[in-house]
Image: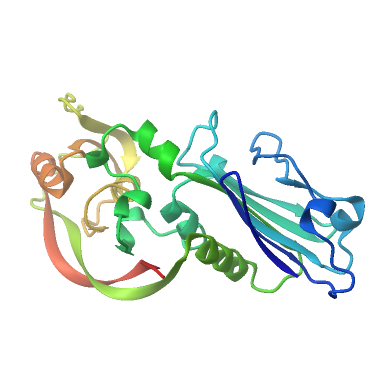
Amino acid sequence: MLLNMKLHSIFFTLIFLTSNSNAQKADSIIKSNGYLDRQDHKAFFKLTDAQVKNKQGHVRYAILTNYKEGEIPLNTLGNFGTVIDQENSSFRLYMINLSIVDMVNFSFGLPRNRIILNVKDKRKYKYSMSFGPIDDWMRQNLYCFECFMPLGLQQQTKTVNDELANLFKINFKVEPRMTEVAILVRTSKKDKISSGISIHSIQGKEAGFYDVPLSTIVQQLNNMEMPPIIDETGYTSNVNLTLDVEQGISGLISSLAKYDLGITLEKRQMQMLIINEN
């Protein structure tokens, strides 16, 4: 039995793989806790003892709710988690206050600048500083998601992706695309970035990176609003850098110049996550 339901801005697909003669109405077998709770990992639905044991693997659900007040969205593992019940052979994945892009990218783990949105309104999918205050945007465009299934279900990742695609009415895949990338290179042999060199003073809205590998900085830059960055400096020691990260690629190029670092823009084939609306 498949039930598609909408109740007070709560969307979910609930599946009980039973014969029609044994099927029961959802409201007679499920009690709702009303929200996803990250702190104590409570499931959205309070299942009966028989459903928790789920010996025949008949219980499975996916649910989507709106932004949850009081839960600070983090760019860390705190935004999502899994609960594996070996005794009852069940698997539960939950995501708290994430954008559509971050939910879809959960199983792929690509940097945010390697995502292509073929959609009518990109504002609904991921935040840009051009949108203004982020708090208002988050309340309108972040969601909570939970998916429950038997532990032995094949292709769990595909199952989660299928549920997200169904709930958001989208389709998505990772495929190679020719993309403009920014190649980070050294413009001289002089070392101006070693962590042993005095730190430049931070001006305005610059970001400071101190005594960290260059690869760590590149990883952070690749989650900002600029082309994919590829490090070809060959530099392996820790560095000190202060960079303009709010003016896009032009600001980055200007702030790199004082360290004898440069950016070369060119087209390369990259694995990109493509999100399309149905």
